[in-house]
Image 1 (cartoon, rainbow, N blue to C red):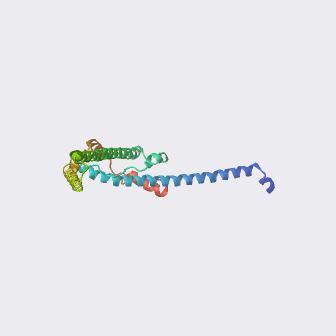
Image 2 (cartoon, rainbow, N blue to C red; image 1 turned 60 degrees about the vertical axis):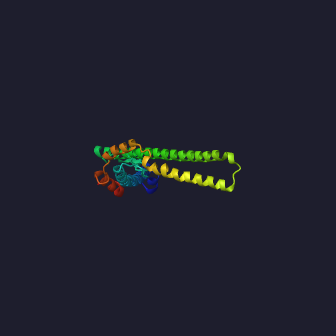
Image 3 (cartoon, rainbow, N blue to C red; image 1 turned 120 degrees about the vertical axis):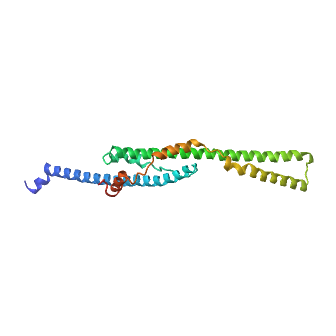
Length: 220
């Protein structure tokens, strides 16, 4: 077979097809490996950031409070990328990761519920204050209605009396809000339960494998 016949033969077409397929396979494998490295990095960083936030939440709960501004799970990278790691983790490791993310999300819900209750409490206090101040003003006007029109001295006395009532109100009612504010125990108790099951994950075999995956695209 001469050169022209070879170039026009089915054998060459087959070889070219195989070569193109092999190159495409290599490109696919590289893209998948890069995606796996990026996914492992995202999961590892989210776990590490969650562990830091969990430590702060644990300190707050020890003091009987949950008025903190933390989100434990930002993006749920595990839910997004877990399909890439079905062969990387054994059953116990897989369950450990899933439980960590699930319990962390439940902890986020407890924090959000507590914030909602606190926000409602603040809104009610604000509404109460506006209503009471309006009542003060109404009472003063009703007491003075027979003297209308009022002179400058009478108006100054009304304003002074109103300001004195506001000061007394702030000292007796507003000054005690921190002491008597509603603090729901359910989210705090729920948080305590979730925290009992949340242990550091980045220092276990899961963390070691994720670090290898983030660096090499495969666990060693």
